[in-house]
Length: 395
Image (cartoon, rainbow, N blue to C red; front, side, top):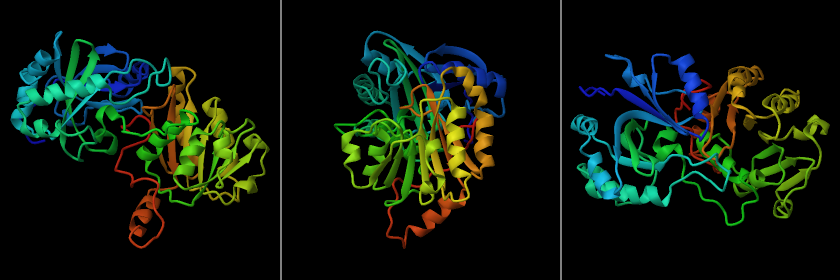
């Protein structure tokens, strides 16, 4: 970014309510950032005067869904007038003089916690309408062309302009570079398709977890899911072509039970013989319990002498936001089991919880990529991008 443009503020978008955690973490980890504006799910911070490190000053937290440099805001009652005003903002004009954004991301601030009051994240009709209006008023040819196309992920390592619909008549403008996978998604939310009959919300949570983590999982791999009832996550794993062993004392949905690649053990994980898991290579867990309870159950499996678990996707429940302070210690605990590549992110479809992904080491990703040219096996998802981690760093 060799140019004279220097932003004065940064922004962070997160889950409704999680701004409490983001602000706390910023005060502790990046005290040079001063809180400037806050609404549930959206925050801005002021950069230090004459900062020489502004390029790396974006908020770093696994609870930050999207972040960038703030370029100001527009207010009004008419979308067409507000769209025209965006391109006249002094900070936007200065940014465009020395940078060439290739896409425009428009999204609404979360209205509630995902899964509550019927709210689910993703592109809304209002965001789509505003994107069209901005494209028509744009002074940037690349954005005019891009907004004439359907919403989709932006290309890697490019500048993107952001418009966050914070209130009905208040839009906040920003920009960011797509330096990692999640930065390519508008608002940090991937475009996921839900089946007509998902068994539960766990289907979407796991879909996002698979897309974000891009673990080197292949069709026909065997996996175990702890806390599998009623079967939303199992439904997604079966669709991906995996052999699934579901462990839960509660009943499973009939459609999952009927699948030939699914086996149900109607017990608690602690009551199952450890050798039962010896031929499973991946572990998934989403248990309605404290993070410590979940890790206790998982540790007994992955540290057993017969374990062949290569990687995991765990959902850790946060019954209160104070539990976020325990995440660094929980991350180190997982690493102590021999999983050196550990990442955390509060997914867009997570409720009041966070996703932990663990892999034995990064070389597993490289080996999987190297072998794709000759292997007949097919990945469940694309290879992982270079994303910093774990807790306290951008995800």
